[in-house]
Image (cartoon, rainbow, N blue to C red; front, side):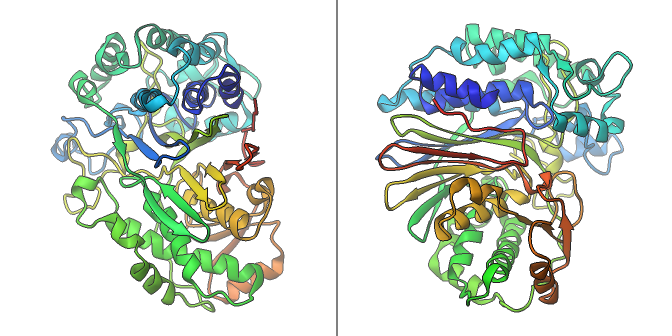
Length: 515
């Protein structure tokens, strides 16, 4: 539904950015266990002949959200669910607004009214949409921690307190009213208008530290993406507080690892070991840039990458004791006929985020702020105004032959790894785009729905590969044929002659839609 909403905007001569706003609004309605307008978002936007730009729509911690605030309530950690987990400003709607402002500058478009972009989402929220199998399963699995939270049962459960079954109709009338209000008066109303006042009043009544002043002060950031030359392409990703640096480091290190003719084992082993190097940098350094003591671009230089690559043993796995970061989200991409391209991610962090649905607006709030710690020595120590660490990182590549590629996935720690698998298969191994996404994948560490830190392989890999990796010291676990924990990836490539090629993940409920 989201892909089709974006496609319809393109058919009306809308830009890729406008198509993405329409798709983002729809996906927030039809896939609420993975994203909502109460979450955050990140954009990479490019136009032919121009340097790509990034939009960081990550909301900061509220002014009242201090370590003492939680300590005075007898809490040793931030609650993972409920109103006190909703402690950061939801940035995604502001990101839509900022992205649209860039689309209209410099002759970049701005052809359709906001009401046209939000109308499909508002109609689906009011009329209802069928519950997907994925949403039904997640709701059942997480029911014990969500069913008593404000607004959750009224929105996502039936009259008997049971999860809505696959195919049942989900209606969200309050959310429809909110989307219609924004379409009439503008997206800024979410932060500085009637919608903002309603959001703030409900949050205050429920016991969240977020207040109206936090919404009033929020502005998304326009940022310069991180970039790295890899093979015959230049790659782009988001800077901190996202893990975009890790995504680039994996590919930059891997490119420099001398891989003898070792077949699939060499390919996967080298990428897994590169992932360990990248994640150690991420976990030691990546935070809100104002709290970082290093420049992330320093790690993207040849000297650092070559040193990291030289330390990889192609016969033995390095130790990997570290726990990973979870995260649930959606990735979407769009490319229009003029070559404008968008790589976009929108998230509420855990499944259903904080689990709190605000009664006046129907907004489901994220729990991204639980990635903060209450220990002042923590790299991610909670501070008012600080932006939380994000696993979100949309990706983009520009090839020397004129191809442009947008790609990405959901899946917490799996995002950089899946990006690496897709890019290397497509760019290096010359796999067709759909095959590069459908082919069996691996995952080091945890992702959504899992807490283990071993190396997981989809069972479509041959058993001989699993044995080789095990003998090299990897703790290998075989999982399903097309396992959802491997992420829900997608990609679009625009070829120099204007041909558009798209691919969607068979592990997901997504689709490719072309105008």
